[in-house]
Length: 378
Image (cartoon, rainbow, N blue to C red; front, top):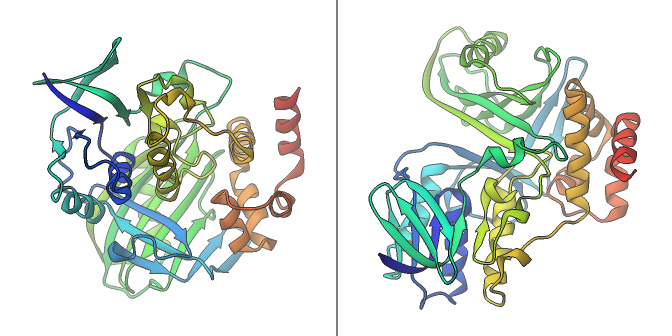
């Protein structure tokens, strides 16, 4: 069996970002690193969006927006994002960026194999694929196991699930300078449902029908709602260019409790997804930096966890929407109708002071959050 210092089981965003940070640190050139994934990462299988006020990955930003639209059945509001911008990165561009960097290092390898199992033994870890076995000192696991969350009830699980259509219209109906961040004017049907629109030109856009709810829908229901929304926009002739589908776990489950001395869970498997929003990219950039800094001084992965105030805020948010899923529109409208959008984005990124937290939270419906708070405390 071939031996490595570090093996990544699953090589999605979190694995690639962690390896990227390891390379930038210049402190792992003497370590052998293996990334394993059944997907060769040669197609544009997803997009990531995030708000940012720096030059984070500006070389591969596909599109950025200075303003955003928020809407529900009763009002709409143009959100001025400065000093933030809302940015989109295509999956393939990010994969290629990291692959190009990896190719310069003989100690880092990517192998296109599906991981069957992994385990920690007394003095080493073993990873099995469909064709080979590997050993290593440390495992970075990003293979999400939904059974861990579904087998308990203390930390409820919502899904952020969606289908997106990239379309090209003959009618010039889109504003390429403004993203539709959330449009809750669609029928809620007892859930938290909204449309998400990212225009790249006057005639091209990604439209996603998105839910925060317990259960998934049949594919036809997502696509029917997208078609209805296209009609509402006044589009009669369009070309369907590409589709994407996703399902992101939203939970405050303590994933880090499944870490062992030599196995750390990362990405969705490690709770790196922002529980209250499902946003992943910005959170992963932060967590990967923390992890790379950690492994330069610590050896025991059971010590890699951090539970702060934003973990608790997210927990209350999930508690409220799990019990009353129809409140999503009311919660977000409370935030954006009178709130400062830049402060809200700062809060959702987990970067506000306690006083700023209070300013944001006072915009939310008081009673359901108070009930969730006291239930958790007592």
